[in-house]
Image 1: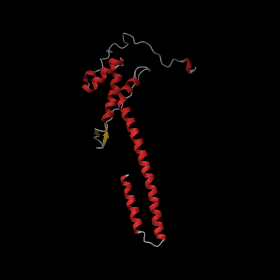
Image 2: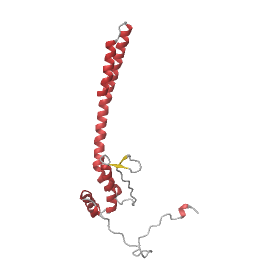
Image 3: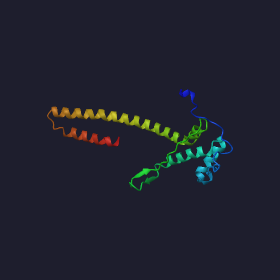
Image 4: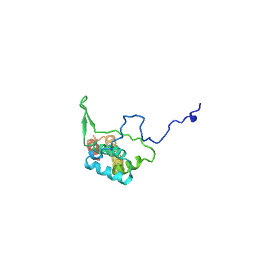
Length: 173
């Protein structure tokens, strides 16, 4: 028997009546229990996209957790060690169900902030690298000056102080 001969996943429409007589229909997702700051985007996205509340809420809660991570610490009772507040979610849905659509809309402010931080880091890093290179060149020159002073039988005290002063300037770069 070849694996291609077997239908691995069969899909069929859900029957109107369940094979399980005690099965109850699912209750509507409790969007009304969310605070207003979270329920407004839930309703707006659902109305705009017709994506199910469950899928939207999954991403909204994940994003809220991400936004709060730097503000809230959870102290584990068994370790007394602070940890960031994190919610871990995953979404299982058919292709085209709206997972990426919802994620891209809700995460857009985070993506924008991330891009701003990347640009700022790149600019500051380039500035820092240039200052470090200048510092290294000056440091080499000061060391050469000390070496020359010692070669000429000077004590090199002035040159040594300049090297120490220059080394301390590294703190302010």
